[in-house]
Length: 150
Image (cartoon, rainbow, N blue to C red; front, top):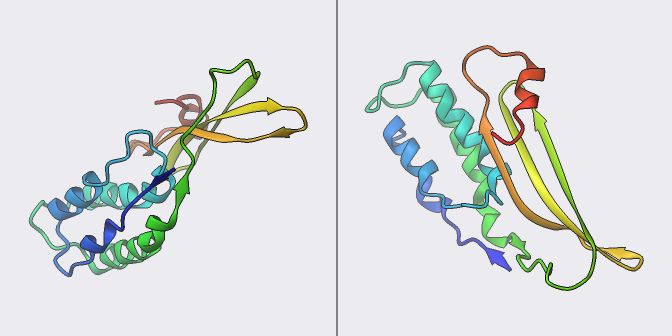
């Protein structure tokens, strides 16, 4: 099982600067992207600082700060999430791989599942997932959807 300690307790401060914002987002180490659905909003908020042309030392506007604190509040219980990491592909049990992807105007993402077939039951295993904020440049949604794995 993979579990995460309560990391975002450190990210509750009143001095929200762009530099500190990036430090918080970058300090969440998740190489397989298993928690990326939870951190997408933070990445989008950081992208908004670029759109608003906020400098590195400038204090964030109140609307972005409010959104940040609400996003961090949602992550308070992240330490209670457990993801089973054992995926048995060494046995002779057939399995299927499912990939799902989706895109919106603000972000796009994809997820890969492994589904072994054991009689009438099948357990779904999360292998990895990826996400990222959509480009600041205006592109149409079918173009974003076609770049599903980045």
